[in-house]
Length: 328
Image (spheres, rainbow, N blue to C red):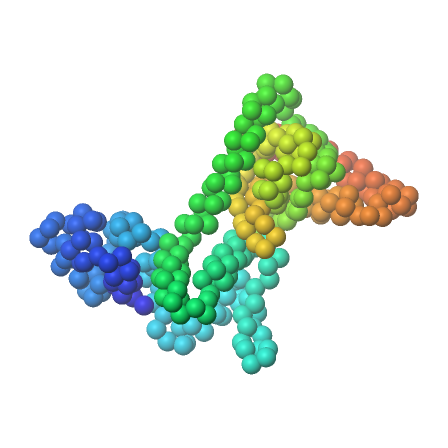
């Protein structure tokens, strides 16, 4: 479908005339309908700024007016090949169906998995055998697709805002009363304390080309907002405080939210190759602290011996490391 065909599709979905749409994006009354007609017939291609105005006027995401134009089965195949090569998709033939499979545990495509989950959830919501409401649900589904990913990003922004509001006072207090993070073992020990007190943490290493990597920490927003005990609130506030310290030292940290069948998680991504070395340590801590056999003397002794050795290996001034890496 061409850009022009998409503009027409969403204009009709909104019961708008060409003139009404043209005037809404800022064209004069005299030229409004002719300008929109030319775009819909693909006689002219709207530039990015105008495409954004068209999307806003039509109540859709700008991606819904993309210039991706798939016309043949060969075009479809090339896109599927790309999915296989870049996103790890696999193809499987089963029970007279052809299934395209993504691994939900693939951290490298966590945002895509979130989008697929949202899509599947919405598709299930509008599926019905009732002919009387099928048409209205189909319209609702089309509107959801046109607006995507606005709804899921609105939800993520709401979750992030709740976290910020929940910990605002605690962070202000820590900024006045606590010493800043200096040595890396303090950060590792705090991660362990968080896990001991019931916080689910999963670590991952994200690679960005040769020699560049980031530590990713996955935490469930529900545990941070609806905390089971005061220790969790206290621990997470200290984590946010340490994160703020690292940012003050110049470390680039970004946050991303994802949603899957397991719930919504917030990812803290620390862009420092040194910190990527903590991935296996943090996952080992989580496995040990949640192991029902951890009270076994041999198991505990082996873990503690390795843990102490890891702390020695990472006995590094994190402030100096960040300043050196970012050449501050």
